[in-house]
Amino acid sequence: MGTPASSGNRGVLALGAALAKLCLRAGPDHRVVLFGSHRSAEPVMMRPEGRPVAIPMVHWRMSLQGGWRHHLLVIALASLAYRLSGSRTLQSWLSARIPWIAALEQTAFVGDVRGGDSFSDIYGMKRFIIATLPVLSVLWVKGGIVLFPQTYGPFKSPLAKLIARFIVRRASVVVARDRESRRIAQELAGDAQLVLLSPDVAFALHADLPEMVELDPPIPGPLATGSVGFNINGLMFNGGYTGKNMFGLKLQYDTFAYDLLVALLQTHPGEVLLVPHTLAPVGDPESDNGASAKLRDRLPPELRSRVRIVAGDYDAHQLKGIIRTCDFFVGSRMHSCIAALSQGVPCVGVAYSMKFAGVFESVGLGDWVVDGRTTANADAVAAVLACYRDRRDRQPALAREAEAARGRLTEVFSHLTATAAKGTA
Image 1: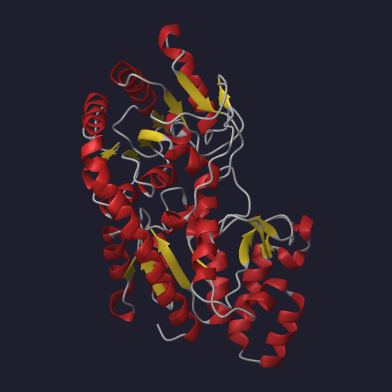
Image 2 (image 1 turned 60 degrees about the vertical axis):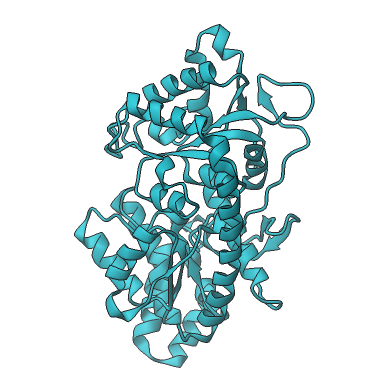
């Protein structure tokens, strides 16, 4: 749970494919089912090991168009009745009518990843509550849930923190993907739970470089190596969903992105590759591709000719393969950065939240995070350029840390799946 079946955000899709891979590898007889918001119960195609696999889908909707049995509020209320009744007769009756409940009964355990960073109210209380209802359903039907490696907090609202504490204290396994999140989750858990630490699951995602990469403007032949990669976060570029500096940044992100792009073109002798990691229609505040086009169009012609935008509709595996060709990478979407870090590509994270620091620290690059909440434009540009100059010195150690992170993930999931299935965490 907590990773969509389809999305323009390739980061959350990377979480789903990586989680499927790790859970399937952890045991020879393991099977994976996807629980979440979707239009239908049709199986979802994923590529956890590089080849397409049909993953069964158990879905909920916020619309009655798919039938009342699949509506999230109906599922939540039915799950609460299931819990409170204590009557096996009523539970069987509910299970026969609510496919979600029937599917939950058949699982060894259910794990939730919350998009990696949504166990928090930073994206708004409405989104937090909607993501919480399926979790409560699992708790009411199964009595426990696994919280897969993710970021916990921050919490602006006391209510959000209260709900978070309720969930963490009833989870069978809680895993954080960075030390600060582990501290926050452990504070929520108290003595009821020992919070585990793991690398982000997307370190396990395999890369798949397309034979021909669609670029704007196009190039003949395959994609060359040695470019500087730059991921422009459309949400930061547009001031968040509100358009009014939703994340409270000191960094003037759109101006910073232009200044940095010019500085990189003046410093790096080759091309700069703009790599959207969330694809959305132009005009959507989430659109990395729209923001990338706006940014490049601001450049004078002599610089614009050395900037190309990845224009194809590529999945997370393919984008990771494209990022692997880069000599240096700058990203503001977390999973664009993880795509680089996990392959030993020196990467700077331009952060809008606490989640970046811990993930970068896990591979020895904690000092390569530029925190947009506290850093002004000129200082941010200077920091990125300093990292660019040090990229070759830091790359060997990064490659070793990335390999170690993949090994730790395998160990964590072998333990996690065995423990969770036994219900003895």
